[in-house]
Length: 499
Image (cartoon, rainbow, N blue to C red; front, side, top):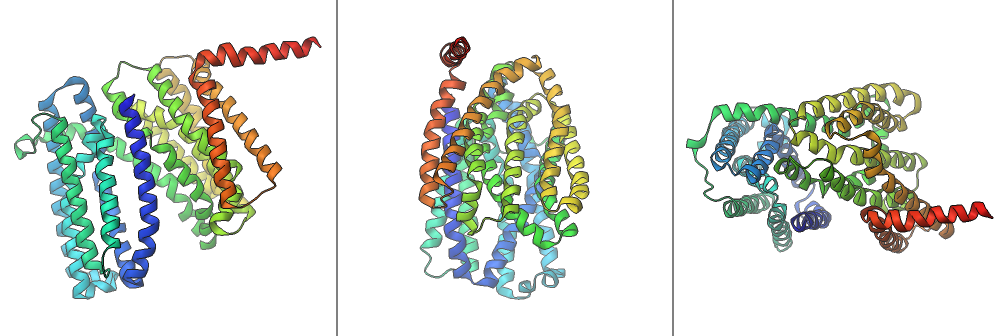
């Protein structure tokens, strides 16, 4: 439990550091680099983001292999698996460099005008070569996640984020070449520190081509590709709506949809910080079934209930503080998107991890594909009928339909009755959520829609404290719930009937 707490708290610290650093550096770089150089800088990192798709799901395989090592202590097998993937990444990295050079010297300037300038060519070359070197070293982060020592990775990340931000702030003049050299070398050094921690946690760990085994790559590929499809379908779910909207309802509709879904996006990020613990933990302790599912869902419910109830009730005020207006369509889309994100988190986050940890990844793929196909079909059907709102309604309907198949299958896998699953995981959570939503709604009505930032911050603090009390007394402490609160409600009801 202590290490899970360390991992989760450090995840949130990293999340906060990235948000704060991003807000500061975005403004600084835009003004310091100038429009042209800043655009080139953003483009480079966007392209690098696509190279991460070359991971092919091996990151999940590394987490799984490392977590199995915790359980089985088979060092030889782990070294074969890690080295097989690491050197596969090295071969891919060589391919990235060759492709980058070919692109630069054949048609680069046709697509990006700046690549005709020798200065920008140097920036591009350095970026391409060093990111190719960084690419294989990303494996060390996945190993630490699999071992359950996420907090060690986060310590390195926090130091990297802080050093990167301070270094850029202290630059007397921001130039894109110097910025690229500084940021990428710092990134590489951070990954080498991750290697240091891996060596501390795995005795006799080494990287050597002698451990490379094609058969291991083929074996891991089965799981990796399925995990990759799940990741890819999630990308489609969260990004396809905007493409479809632009083709049917115009680019203006994309702007409305993007603004409205930012609040659910941040809520999703808040909810995901605990989930990283779950997959390696389930892999390393496969004999634990329902109890672990129950505990994991309690944690997820604790976080998601709090963020959802506050964001749902005060969506209008939060959006007003952010963009300075309260467009009814944006508010409605935000509310519906919050519901989608909340329901998907409760039903799928922990449960998907359990299925994947128990070699049911092909089933997760099927359910994900079902939701994607339904989502795309319903979006094309509903957007022409009801506008931008149709995209979110389509997502909700697709989620509900897929859950009709997903939930019975999952309950069967954990070998419990549906009523037991619902009672243990959702019954008390729903009660706490209902109380919190009601209390916040009453406060909102009494205070009559004050849009001040201090007002929102104060309410967030007060509602958070109230929610903490309710959750740990109603949900976490089952004895108190059954013998104190439930008894009080029943006794009060009987007294009322007797009057």
